[in-house]
Image (cartoon, rainbow, N blue to C red; front, side, top):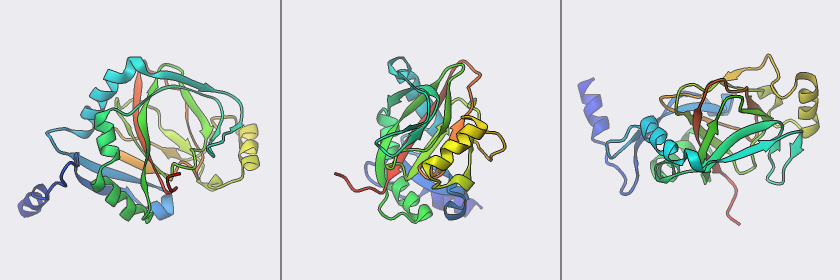
Amino acid sequence: MTRTVQAAAARPQREGDLVIDARQRYGDWRQERTIGLTVELGGGLDLVPALQAEALTLLDQAALFTSSGFTENPDGSLTTDTRFSFYPAGPVLQAIHHSPTLLAMLRACTGLDDLRPARAGYNFYRSGDHLGIHRDARLAAVTLVADLCGNLPAMRRSPRHARATNPALLELVREGGVFPAGHPSLPVPHDHLRAFDGRSVPHWRPPFEGELGMLATCSFSTDQPA
């Protein structure tokens, strides 16, 4: 046991890479379209406290985002009723998002060899904020999330509607509303990252009941730059 810990600690850090180690924690991407990740940072930083501290510095600059109705967007996403605030990533989240170590691990775990960083930022939730059933943009082949306060309700998702047509999803909304019941839970961890396929599998977050929730999020694309 001691030898294993010493060997892991001695792993060389890639020059300029904030992430010194990234490992799959659980799950099977090909079967479940979601996995858990353990990510270790250099510079004496712990993942969630470092992201939480950064998010708090950006909170007052976040812009409120709202939508309603069943909307098919030009970026390939599909949205329903939504309310939360957003601000783009600061230096810490950007460094994690663009980490060669993290990217290599994600490519290996998902089998997506052309994966590359796309977008990153922080979602802020106040009382009543929510994400109705939706699918992410085409760019989001893989999305990483972490609950920075440990108080966000679990997402729900419908794997049986993976890659369903928009009319089929509209029928799901008509039958069950924007928070349909009876679907699997997708908790967002507080001490590590979860990766999931949000562009294929529709998912949603019920209304937040606390005073402040914060979510770190970043996505990775297989699309080629324009």
